[in-house]
Image (cartoon, rainbow, N blue to C red; front, side):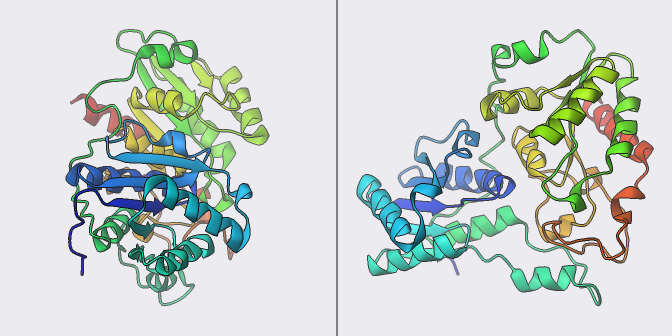
Length: 358
């Protein structure tokens, strides 16, 4: 049951500290909520390096990034809570994370007689969906909808539709990414590829992904942009950029969210895993094709407004075995990924581009 709508002048503190993809999924819900209640101010508290992903924020949304290493333990979280309260005049608190840190902040809110609400993560449902036997293979509530419900529970309705995606009204300035991409030639196709994820159970085998890149790079008037980070990813993506024509690696260059999101928005399609890049690309409104292995869109983590036919996956009885892809494969071969044919991914990417142009 949703709470009564908040009065004008109320200030809602919302928190989500990790992971990057989960923080990205708060954007549609928060922006819709702010646009629906312009007289209520929302303060979104997250990690400092994630704060820049919030672009084109509504006038009544303030995003605050903090280094949690500066606020360790109960005393540190109490200090952080009091800083938010004294700086912004917090009147309500909505916990979009429900972990130890944010549970402490809920406790502190109660001590200060500040009304609270929290996300329902559906942990029991997810266990039934991912257990090894007798799975309940049904789609669960999407994470973005769970955020909307938590916001509504604090009195901040978040009806879908007002948020259209980053750069929906005005395309980003080409100057943001000109040094990376250069000018786009007439008739040229731009394809973004983000082949990595946090866990092995969500990464399409590298040797197979290279076949995908080889095929796509061989298409006429096509440029590929490879997204990734870290030494291992940088090494592989740099090698692919060297081997295949019209292929650019962005790995290890640290352009920042505003630049990379602007570049993503200009792609004809972005190919990803079930990863943070899937969510970031989706926020720009660009068509996204994603590859799924140990995880499953039914867990509620598919990209914002990404149609199900754009999710490349195999109907294996063991899937999904994990919510986050962090469990070792029971058979050790990750067949859920290795059995996906590279050509099937290429075909899906080509179909999405063709559909966009039609």
